[in-house]
Length: 154
Image (cartoon, rainbow, N blue to C red; front, side):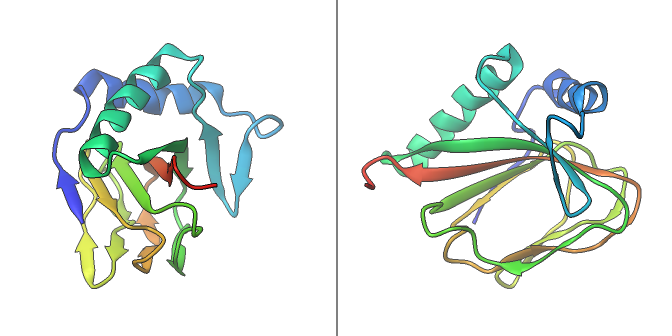
C-alpha cells in the first residue's frame, strides 16, 4: 500500500469539492447506492491536470499501467462500501481524500485501516487486496477515486 500526504495543491482540493457541489445533476451523473458520482472527463482543465499527476504516479509504480477512469464521489452520512475486490482488469486503485470533517469513512485495505485526512492519497492493488469503506457516521465524505488498467492487456 502506498500513502502520500498533501498530494495535490490545496486550492485544487477545494475546487473539486466545489465542482461537485455546483455541478452534480442526478439526470446526468451516476448515483451508486446513495453516493453521488461524477466521472471526471479530461475536457475539463481541472481534471486534466489531476490526470497528468496521477499518470506520473502510476508510471512510477508500474510503467505498464494507465488510468482507466477517475470519479469524484460524494459519500453522504450513513453510506459505506462493504468488503470487495475491484474488477480483474483494475490492478491498481488510488483514493484521494478531499476532506476530513466527517466521522467514520475509514478505508480498510487488507488488515490496515487508513484514516481519512484531507489531501491524503492511498494506493493499493485493488483487484488483489480486499478493501472496504466504513460507515460515515457524521458529515459528508468527498473522494477522488481512480482505477488503473494494464495498457498491454487485451
